Length: 427
Image (cartoon, rainbow, N blue to C red; front, side, top):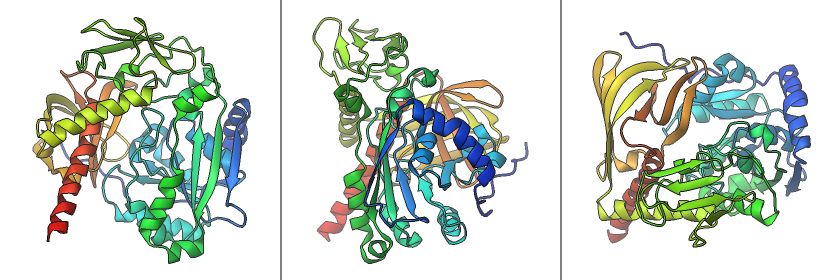
């Protein structure tokens, strides 16, 4: 099979169409935000006009509605992953100002395209620096390259932090999110004006971003006593809480309705209307879901540092070079202290990819993923890209392992960079 055409990342982004965006915002974004009592606090924004570099937290499918409500009445150009381009249509996404990229690879065309928008369209340029949705409603890793990117763009740096959007529509439970009308709040903060961006080192810009880029949606829900009576609110929670905190068993957690349970030891938890966990036996170790999530990461970090971490499985492989998925059959995946490796047929030819720990800082994962065009169910999957194609890998035999793979990818990367820094300091 001949390899299909790949997306051309060198094509210039389009200016968002004003009429189209006006209709979309008027009939979709603004009414939904009004229904959710949206409020935005503006900090250090006096005199800040576009173009500016806008960094937003990535929590749910509601994020764009919040963005447009926060910067109303402005339009923007924004960075969007190729799978989102596929799901919504490349032409439509470009028409709305989208700038396409593949996740977690170095891409100089992205910088060029963002700079092009700053110079020609004078819009806010928006990115989600976490590069994926949050899984537990708290902030994720932000790469240090963001500060360097700001220096290259030479425009003010603005951070948007929203709350309430995650609890309405977490990645592990997205169905019928419109039936969960939690109030949404946000703050739009200028952390560096244009003069400061040029004068400050990238490290200081990163520090200022990190200082503001903090959120916890489950804490927001509990502290504000936001009751969500959705009867399936715990369904899918086992995707991120894959390890039992009672017996330590992995990949034996199940969830449905309002209940999370371990099939190995029988322990059960109720997810309350306020987003807390309560053990049925009264002995609750982690009432706050992000605490359990962090405990799992710490366990993976310990495995990585001890050199004992390893996940190996068969995978079903699809590729996404541009706007269509192509089935490549079954391959093999392995991740351990030497890095991330997989092998498969690639358009009829044998193919292998080996990424050392310092070559992959994170990985994109999806739960219960569906090809929206073909309505084909992929299931849980991870996405690893090279510049001209993206590989969607779906584990066959080990259930609910992709969250652990995501943790391990980041911990392997961080460990390798700690080793490199230590080696430099010894010289």
